[in-house]
Amino acid sequence: MKSVLLLAVSLAVALTVQAQTPKVTPKPAKPKAKAEPEVSYPPTIHGGKEFVTDTAPEFLQPPATIRAGVAIAKTPPTVDFAYYPGQTYRGNPWSNWGDSLFANGKYYASIGDHLAPGGTAFIYEFDPATKKFRQLLDVKKLLGLPEGRYSPGKIHTQLVLARDGWIYCGTHRGGTRATDGDKDYKGDWLIRVRPVTAKAEVVSEGPVPGHCIPTGFADPQRLIFYGGTEPETRMGETNVTFFAYDLAARKMIWSGFGGPARAMMFSPSSGRVWFNADELTGTNFVRFDPAKPGKPTPVSGTIGLRAASDETPQGIIYTVSHARKDTDAQLYAFHTKTERIEVLGPAAIGTNQYTTSLDADPTGRYLYYCPGAHGGSELDGTPVVQFDTKTRARKVIAFLHPFYEKKYGVMLRGTYSVALDAKGETLYITWNCSRGTRVWDSCALTVVHIPASERRL
Image (cartoon, rainbow, N blue to C red):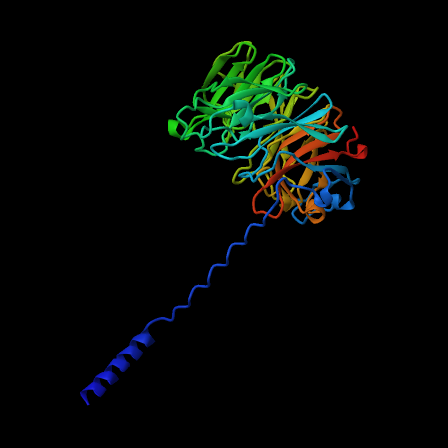
């Protein structure tokens, strides 16, 4: 009888506790991440073609993200497409980071595998007459370092063909800690390659000791390499260093803290260089004059400077800024003789702001750029933008997405590498591409032939 009574009491207590305990709804299981598709290497175009050419009305169909006031071209361009050779294995990822070059009728661009610590980068020549690529440089092969040593997976500087017939560039690590395990690391390399023979040489190892070189270009006439560097993690430094290096004498002209993180302006007419010592805030605008080498001189005014065009015949360098929390990326005009700064207006044509390559045509009338450099350009249709410096109008001359994804299974997602031909008629763009993967997995070239009707003076 006692046991029955105890059972009844226990049951009553359990029911009371259950009534007082809030009901807990089990959390739904997290959906499994979509598996990355298997992609082949080297990347190929459907049908086994190496090179395809298209022109289509779809190039002029804007997505819903396009802003009011942005014009669309009337005539679609003809566009060539090809994958870069040499991508025979999976990179981390294959990508382009340094601005390209058009010279002597040919296009030169760099791509890299972004592997760390043992990566490599390549420079290619593309001949539009034959529609063929030629590999000029394999960084890892040139350096010839023992297995286990760090070798750079990026070329992050501009390519510049100098008067001595060499293309100059600097290297950059494939990951932020890529050099930390290499006790013999002295710093990254200044390299040159001769297009005619594909002969390559190291100009300097570690011009700024222990630093890599994410920013830089050569003055083609004075043979000075200007760079902005970053220290390796273990050095405990955080400052960027600006340097000017004599390529002919192979010696440092000047170097010091306070440098350009990603971009500089250069005037071939005077040899002067301008940059923001604090690029992200657009402050501490300074000038370096090779005629009076020394600590850069402060310049009055504020200019956004994530990318810069060449100096135009009018003595103007155009720049584009980073976007701020409450301000769109802006286009600027910098008058090199007077150092006067003009704000021209917003650069964005849709949701994307980040632009890392800006090219002026030979007349100085038009600028060309592709917003969404670090991915996401497809959200605005992967636009190729023309800016009219006279009317300050933004016009999209082509939307390359979703055309290439639908026809060839490739999404063009951003670029750091754009160059205009000598006549201002053809735009060469090296793209970071996705063939269904979440991130880039390959690099490809488009050659955009700009209709004459879209570039009238």
